[in-house]
Length: 307
Ligand code: PAF
Image (tube, rainbow, N blue to C red; front, side, top):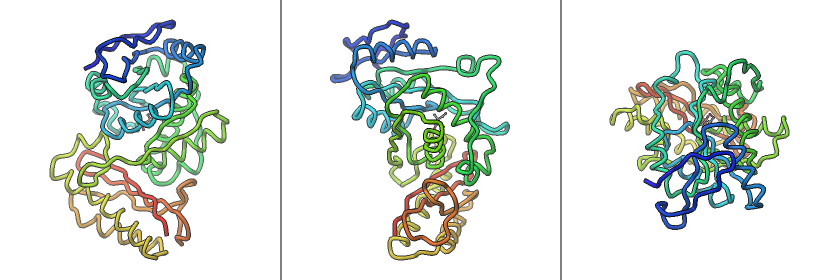
């Protein structure tokens, strides 16, 4: 594992030894002031664009692909690690959400990250914090229905991270398509000066979308969870072959997923990729989105369908 050190406000990047060739050692900041100081230093030196990869840690290939995209497109890559309590419901898995900062830093070593912002609720939501982002219709359907308040929590923390880091680009995964749509809406409505880059879903060899929550699955649950991917793939093939009826596609996805007794489907929907509103007739690109409980894990996945 490469060596990491904590940054101070005026820390200069330590680009010496231990990191793999071509990479440099990232700083680790735990406070908002440290992050601001480090990014300001980069800006003062006119060293190029800043990219932000917001995460809740527990890294897998999906996170690493976002870091690689940020590395390829920007000169300074900041990765935040914060398990955000504001986006978890009272009966959700906030307490048990996997946390392994040491493992995360080891896994991300060599991805060319310049700064990790590893923080906690005391720093992000100090006593007296009460302002939040109010989301609209884009956050109401799909996951918003089963997880009331979730997207307001996501939008609030992402707004804070954008204000803290001030990136030129923020890198998000297509797997969280509704999250992307909510953040797009917020960035547009509230005039954040940032470009949103969306990176493809990274899948395990059998097709299951990578997720930190896959760690909760037994081998059999993991095997059956592939039904989500297989149903989406079949939907994509049917639409490509000329099917235009969203109701027929939805029925087919439900039937395919129901054949797996460990997969408890929450929704299988066809929606507009930007507004997340249901579509009846498929005449252009649509988003097929699914969510299901598999054992202890709530999993989501989606695919763009093009006629
Ligand atoms: O996608 C996630 O990991 C989280 O929702 C995010 C964007 C880091 C906000 O907490």
